[in-house]
Image (cartoon, rainbow, N blue to C red; front, side, top):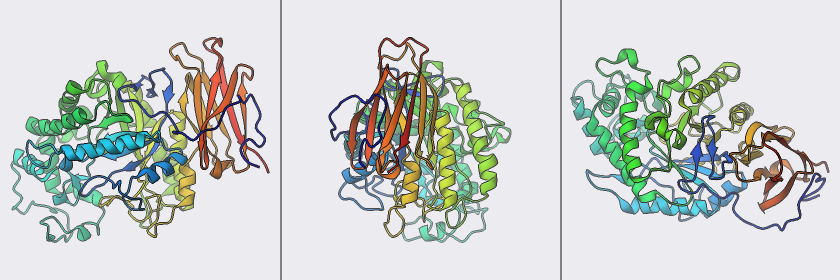
Length: 530
């Protein structure tokens, strides 16, 4: 049986048409609320599911020319992502590409970024622009800063790269210099990249970034250029200031090494002000110090209410956080009992505390980096179910390898394995049934990947001007024989097909305008039997 087998419960007659999965986020139209949720212009809660697409090597952007399984982001990729329910990407917009030299803005690169955002938008996919970094520089076996900015950061704190404290000291690893003058990348990848953060040179560079207002201005220059060129672009979701900022002890700050306000806030405020001078509406995403995500259940953030922009910008600010577990050499999760029972629940308890403090939106901008094995799938279900409970959006790391030179799992973290074959079980785990748009105050959302059953409840609220919610279904993976829909109150809540494509359907759930505030609406979806 095909579409509609066993359907029940108030289906409106509608024509089926091929179209965008969702209307993408219109630049400046999204806001956030004090419950950590994102809202559209009609006041509906918006939930985003997506992937990271961060190209870490020159030319610092996925290719749009032709599809491949390593580093493309083409229309074919957009159609695939759409079919799996992905309505956003976290797109790396890299500092070395935007500002390759002092006072030089690469407008060609920014135009290419804009073309990519616009193309993705035509498939209902919004783009979060991410100034990505890992260990700051190729001189540290990482990426992030342009070389000239890295030099400025070291000079700001008087670090001598010719001394015995130069990278990789004090680490006892053998990393020869490559032909390009950077540490040899093969030798770099022989060690966990995380350890390079503990080098003296890394510490100095981070201290320079945090302590020098001149460095704050350089990062602000990057973001002012990006915002000036990209503001108003259809599908622009937001700007993420910097990925995974590292703690820095500096010379006298060891007692405040995990203070977001002491370490990050001055830098963030400078960058935020410069963005707002050219774009006052688009969401600004900000991360805590990377280690804080793992201790925030007992030591929540000390960012002020509203984040870098304060209370005035709380409704245009989004707290960006990550959630990972350790991995084995083969990419599978390590310490699964501890991860399942302690690590992940504690991370999410910290998220809840931080959102209550900040009164901003929230977004899980990285998780995953896992394979296709049973433990990996269990971990994906654990993370995404926690996100559902808080109505949080997420972006999986990573869609493709994109020359991922700094990762905990380069072999199997992508959707496609090293042979170019799609990791089907992982894709199914991420192509969850969910409500990307909720026309009321959300109360409960749950999806069972084992049964395919989905439940959503929300309450009619006066602040929401639209009557239409939406639910995404991956029909090939979860409903091959059709599905049933039950809505309550049945006479006043109807559903219809909004759009569909190969293997997916987007449903509209529409409630009557005469439903009184406080009325609870429920939607239940289940697969049909043969």
